[in-house]
Length: 298
Length: 241
Ligand SMILES: Nc1ncnc2c1ncn2[C@@H]1O[C@H](COP(=O)(O)OP(=O)(O)OP(=O)(O)O)[C@@H](O)[C@H]1O
Ligand SMILES: [Mg+2]
Image (cartoon, rainbow over all chains, first blue to last red; front, top):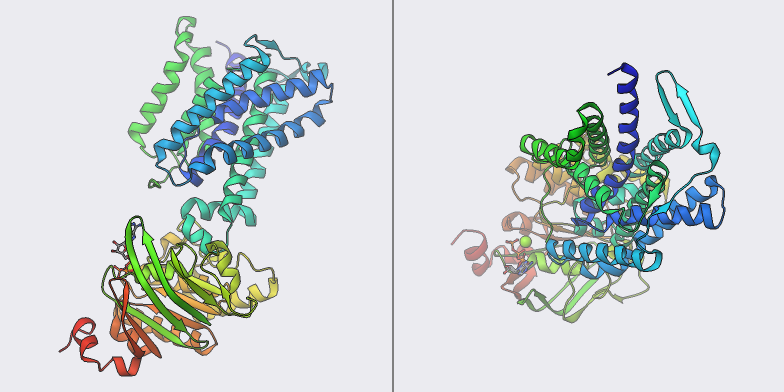
């Protein structure tokens, strides 16, 4: 096993980790603000991937135009889901919201199959994004570089928004105490909606990346990365954005290295490995790596 | 300034307030005392819009309302903007936000940057500890410091009427004395106060008028100076004979 091979695997892990991190952020933010484990969140990846396909291949839009549109469309989908499915359940026991999110998830998957058929579709990016770049020992396609760089930019922007803006302060306050946030004059409906919009925009972009990375998409593609990103959020400490980012990269890296460094016969166990990692980390750190204890909110 | 007219409030299925009326005049300090579970918190949460009365009305008149307005259906996030700020039971500090952010979020609805900066300086003068701890998280403060933060945060909204729910809870006697002299000072600066207290003797001494609530109904009301000598009040709330 050469150093070049290992470096290559690390880059692959960072690419996968970027996607997990972007999706995990949404899981974590949504849980943080309304204590909802939103199982439908993974479906936004699928929606983002198909939107990208439509914008790039059907409408022939250039990539730099399509990408921001996917971000915006993801936000809109998040707002619709929040308003339609979760707002009516505000204040219900946690498990009710969880079941509702499973319902939304199944509905979106089936809607996808109905509208788009279960047939996988090839997903091709323009040539200039497919060209291979060699840096030192590692080679990757331009799109892979775009994935890693744009994930960093988006996460930086998000941290700025959450910690340095008025909306971000309102979001953090609402996550801690809804009643007191209202007493401050914070419109919690708007704040929760903004949280869904931001989380879903990031998941939709992860869908674009998913298509770019793996080259094929289908209406059920959101399930597994959704679940793994949820694991990433839990590993990092659910409710914590830096935790979600860290969890995403840890999971992406360890998954790729597990498959890449161990003999091929083990690669079928990659998912078992992911969940074992979760259990091990939670045994040592029950609140995740950066998580704080959070009380339920009935 | 505030007139509560015969409100009934349910919490779940419990009929907690069974026709409560009270009024607060501009410039006053009014205290509200009563045993555990009498419904004092429920009254303040209803004024602040966190709870809705099933019957009755709440009239408010401040510089931000057009005349006397019924606020019994106005949601909590709008009430602060009308000049009423509620300092909740248990303080409600945002423990993950910094001390400065906790204060600034009190001014969430305000747009006047200079006024906010002035008030921030004023609050830090009133509670110097808050200025020196501005970068710490709210959760790292002691109980007494958190109470100061809660009061400071409420002041950042520039309230005309400030409602306080048991600010002395869990604080040592020196800090309570300190806090009550700050409340008197705040009132001198023109803020009307409605104060819920377990510490009845302190509340009676600080306030102009007092209401006594017993299981969802007003049992007594009057000038604090008179109630302090009232036999019933002495027996029930002042631990005397
Ligand atoms: N969320 C709730 N659901 C049902 N009943 C409630 C709820 N909150 C309070 N109550 C009931 O309403 C009544 C009044 O409660 P409230 O908190 O207003 O009393 P309080 O006078 O503030 O008491 P304390 O001095 O102990 O703070 C109590 O009997 C209480 O059990
Ligand atoms: Mg109370």
